[in-house]
Image 1 (cartoon, rainbow, N blue to C red):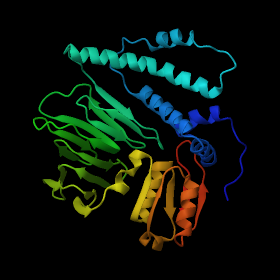
Image 2: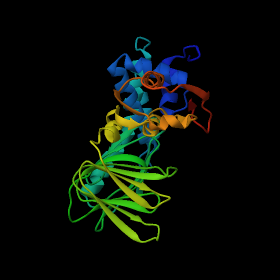
Image 3: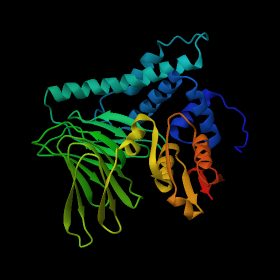
Image 4: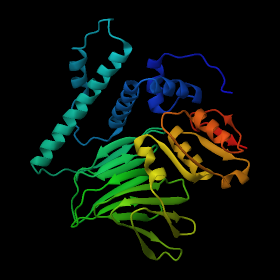
Length: 340
């Protein structure tokens, strides 16, 4: 049973929810509030994108965001008739102004073909996702606790980006300039125009590539440090074991691997270890399986707005597993859930 806690004002909880510093009980309170109204969920998503954008390293230092912010703050109607929700929407608009100015400066610079130097770094907080468009028009969905680095302008014979974490790419076709995703552990993915998902966290033992359309080549070094390439066809998933330096190919619909970008969890006869990994990323928790015989269990189902506790109880009802919180979140570690 989840311990009872006093209810905190939502205006206090939302900033900490976006920062990923809430307790599981507080996060449940926010998610229940969001599930009651789609407008609330959209508001939180907008606030999350603002927080993300504020973390992006900008290459236009001439923009004085403080002055722009003060000018707009002076125009705000501070009448008490406005609810805190309206106030948050106005704050969101204010924060977007300097970002919009930065985008306009970037557009003008690109149109005038002036040289631009520097790399843009975008990172997502644990439990949050984001979307962005690269200079060539490639669309990227960035999953939780992930970092993408890319040049402000693609130049040369290739379009290279660096990913640590998970992302779904819809690459703009350009046969003359291959699109290359560099990942940890001396591996990369080369594409010309396609849609695919990459999971390559630095602390994981595997790199996973799932191809929806087009064709990609996964480049890696084998156990003898010899460079190898493995081609993927649509509906194939490649799993590269880092320690063994070996690749395995599987056939998949891609729904389980890519549902996260639409805010969903889709399980299709999915083994328990993979289910727990999906939940770890979605809810910023960690799992410890004490009853290893449960690793052979597989689950099918779909979730969208359900809380972690609700999903865990569904898994409990459909199998023999039991679960409990073994520890709460700290400043350095997420909550630990024990499966027994």
